[in-house]
Amino acid sequence: MPPPPDFSAPTHARFRAKLAALVELAGKADAPGLRAIPINPVSSSPKALARYRDLAVLAIEAREGRA
Image (tube, rainbow, N blue to C red; front, side):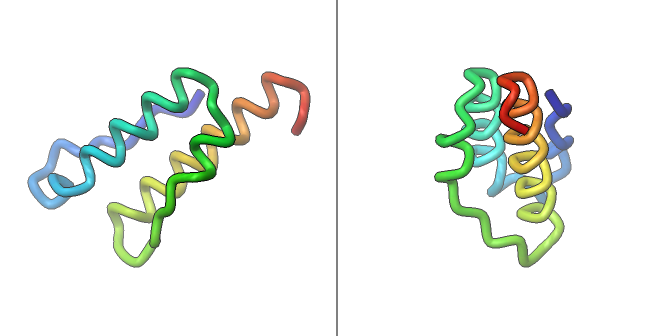
């Protein structure tokens, strides 16, 4: 599983809840749940969220033998 991005900087504050939701779903190996969370990657924070989500889905599917 990929490590979650570091959102400790104040500029990431409004995205911490979404990151927490992604981390929770990744911990549960819920690939469909991860895919269902919309992310509009228009700035650095959402791009990091999308990258983490996509890598987590790949890791889950690889673990399940679907990749």
